[in-house]
Structure formats: structure tokens, C-alpha cells
Length: 151
Image 1 (cartoon, one colour):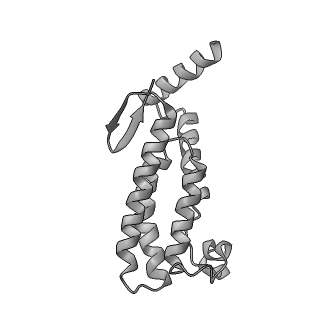
Image 2 (tube, rainbow, N blue to C red; image 1 turned 90 degrees about the vertical axis):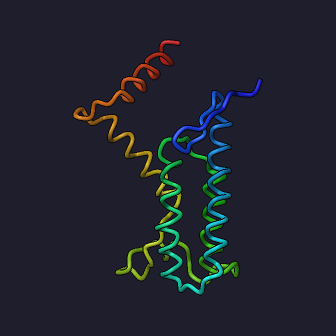
């Protein structure tokens, strides 16, 4: 039986976690392709392209990376889209690990998608462990963790 699904605040939710992940990452990778396709028509330099990636694409990713389980395949696909956009689909001219570095280290401060995803997940852990933050989401999470440990 297929899980029920619905959309709330722009995020697909389903009783089946695989459907939730699939729909959200599929929608967003398609949106990223469209945005990058439009910006490929402009004659942007490398710094301009990085600004597009950080300003337009990263904001789209925060919305799904933060609350959802990691989809490593989608992260690899997004990474490929990033570097194809930066290099005009002509292969790597600059090493990826150098482009991520700070300006002082000869880099261009490009976002590393995998690290970006991990930092968003770590933020949730930090908020959960902070005793001064007492949102209802913490109660829900705590009850679910306790309930699954009892089973």
C-alpha cells in the first residue's frame, strides 16, 4: 500500500518516509535545474555564478535539507549540477576542494553541499539539547524517541 501524502509549507509529507524524501528531493532538483538553466544564458564570471549558487540555490536547499533525512544520491546530483554550472559543462578547470576554500587560501568560498547539509542537521541537535529552547517540537520528538525505545 502506498503511503498517503500531502504538502505543507512547501514540503511534501507522507506516511512513507521514502516517498517524503523522493518527492522533496525530486521537486527541488528539478527547480534547481530550471534556475541554473536560466542563469546559464547570462555571461557571468565565476564569482557571479557562485553568487547565484549561494543566493538562489542554497536558500532552496535549506528548506529541505534542514528537516528531512539526507538523500545522498540527490546531494551528489546537486553537486554535479553546481560544478557543471560553474565550469560551463566543460569539466573541472579548478579543483573542487580549492573552490570551497576561503579567499585567503586561494579559494572562492563555494558551498560544499554535503557539509552544508551536515551543518543544518547539527543545528537541530544543538537546538534540541539547548534547555532554554522549549518548543512543542521537542516534546513531540522526545515522545517519539521514548516510544521507539520502549518497543
